[in-house]
Image (cartoon, rainbow, N blue to C red; front, top):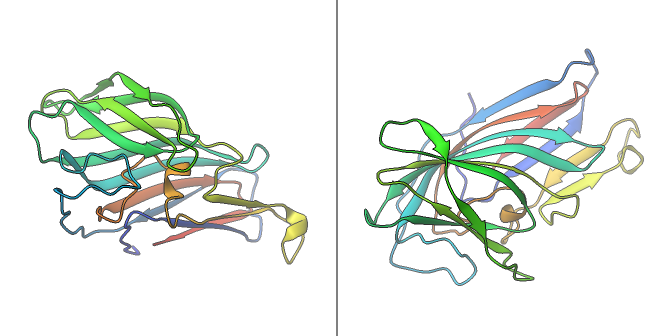
Length: 209
């Protein structure tokens, strides 16, 4: 399986291929290997409290809706606790519709946990504040993007070469990843990932970093 590293800018390309059936298709990606973070530093362009928590792994499970121009599904984050007393995880988001958040406690079982979105800044977006139970090192955020997400570029079929199918690509630099994934959107973080991308059958998903 192809291996990638994200930092945390992800690139997702959806291109047309020969249709096989009307059933949705699922593409799976993964990578391994993460580096340390300088937890004592604070990135002025990120809300993430990296001194308390560090993302080690991201698992995406997203459905692509070309008609509505949205991605919807979940992002699961595996974390390292740097501060055992920390009770709140801060993530970067921008114009994401956060529907629910779950945290896994010491028993490994997910349960709903309180969350809140701060008031939005025009550039940085909104901090997502997630209550972390004692010992919890996993969170799963259920969410959807919006059509105006700055990191998602939706092309109609007419804008493509063959004029047959729509096309989507992402541009996560410099801080656009937060417009389509709730995450610690800072180069301080080196995290591995895996992803399930569900697309129409005539479209193939390609992912890199």
